[in-house]
Length: 306
Figure 1 (cartoon, helix red, strand yellow):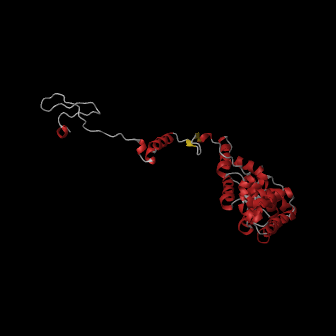
Figure 2 (cartoon, helix red, strand yellow; figure 1 turned 30 degrees about the vertical axis):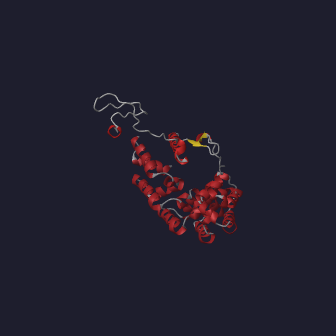
Figure 3 (tube, rainbow, N blue to C red; figure 1 turned 90 degrees about the vertical axis):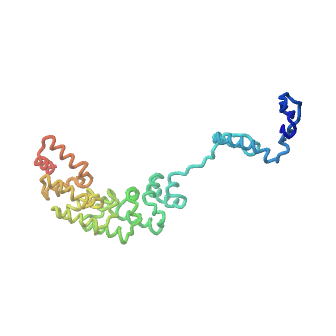
């Protein structure tokens, strides 16, 4: 700039002086360059608001829980805004839904409360697809025809709701006829069904008949098998022959019991081979008796006696 405008050029805006290139003396003030100030008013409106928007965005990013209230520009905390309350539905409505209200009410008319009706629908949701008039109500009348009262019917449906989806002609009636063929009368059948309602849903030919024949093979006759069914119907309708009954009887025989003693033990205490776990109950108890000094013959004698 000194070469273009002279060595003595000085900026008026900054007040600095340029020295004379030849003498080194300070020269006079010369306006080197005049800058025009930039006015915000001369900028486009959107560009003038850009800094404010950037500052606002940065503030909102730092405080994520804050939000601008639309309308007056007030800043309101999102945490302070009350959330709308959604009314909670009852347990029956959650399980069954609005379309199953008639089925839930029908179950309640049988003697169940709200929670029992909800649990029943939850166990067997397909019940809501069956007609009350054409499917469910006839099954209830048939159960009452066996000798079950209202309380027994409600309890049977709670514990085994699958019986409502079984066909009377193809499933329930043939099973009852087979059970009666063991020597049980109507009252005994009703008692067995009341104790273990899932007995009606068991397959007579594939499940119950092999167990009955196995019990007879131990030395029981038909009347003794019938008594076992009345006392402990779960043995006939809820136990696996290969995975449950046979391994437990084999354990008893290893102690020294013969078939007749095993049959006698089952007739007196059928839950020995029904409810007791082989690994968690029977074997630990036998080992505990051995640890206390009992011989196997003494254990066998106690089992055969009691």
